[in-house]
Length: 371
Image (cartoon, rainbow, N blue to C red; front, side, top):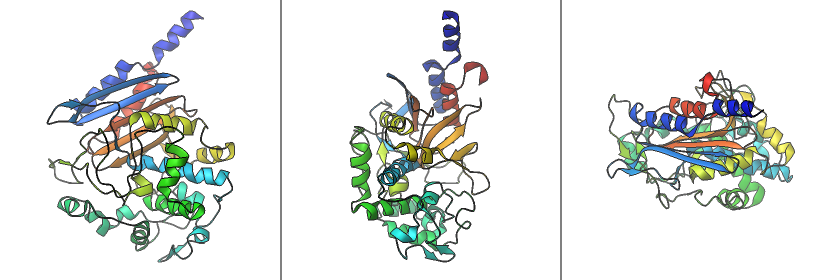
């Protein structure tokens, strides 16, 4: 029995293996800095490589706050699913019921698109971030001109709808930030309160996520944070790198605008996956996934649920959580389906690519002999 336990211990990842991947992210992939926290039961481990600030050589720290991009979607979905559990709304409700007349024309019919289809990206609604005119404002020199622009949710939906839908509702999978803007607008209609207030009182405050908040139009990250190094979507072979930390992310809002820490992300996703935030029926809905192949390019080897996705690692292990990319910050927060073993990682640069995160996850969740 003792020999079996020792063998099992030898087959799981060690902090040294994860640390080795973090070091390579900087030395081989060119990340300015990377931070990771592993949480398994009551045990926690923090590792890092590179710098929060390359000019001052300040190292990464566990309490640093950073922009989490689309990992925000898990918070948004959790609020919607809580409201569904309370009978305040239904996942089968149509957009038209809550936001009459907002989604129509140019091939759209809000009377055919459900809340569930918003959350699992099967609505077919165009991603406003891919609108050519909108995207141009956030690229290169134009970013400096527009970095403090305030954009309303209604304006974001309007930008999306001037482009035709990807497909009829339920006709496929297409990742779209517009879905989660609409989901938060529905939250506000159903509750009579702002989405920021709802996510704070339902998620952030009960879980004591002291480093997590939705900035709204606030441009500067509160408290300690790394420099957010960005190429501003440059296609040049050796692009210039800028500090993109200060910016108004009202254009991301409920789809990608939140700020958090590696520790807070592990705490949140551990609670979400572990069933401590949702009733059983809504938990089952969250884990009901759809195929992600066939539409616009997205993360390979994944299936998408409601605000979370599952990813198959190189060893065949599946992990659950969400991820996000924004200017100067890429984030991954994944773990076992029961939420007891979690890993959150962040790179304070936006050019290293997804392979770094796959390698970190494999180092932690794959048996040593299978990598």
